[in-house]
Amino acid sequence: MRKEFGKWLMDIAKYITTAVVLTSIFGSVEQEWIIYIGGFISILLTLGFGLYLVRDKKERD
Image (tube, rainbow, N blue to C red; front, side, top):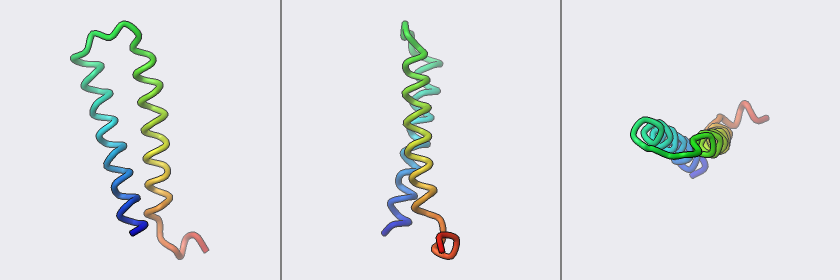
């Protein structure tokens, strides 16, 4: 179950990346830096926690 949740979090990071890229291409937002910083922090958190959950038990010991 732990690995599945980790994979799900990594998928969420991919979706956030896609949303940030598409917003920057197609959107006309006045303060783009907020989208970039918020997206970058969200991507780092979800990807990092997802990778932490997916790694093997042998590595953790």
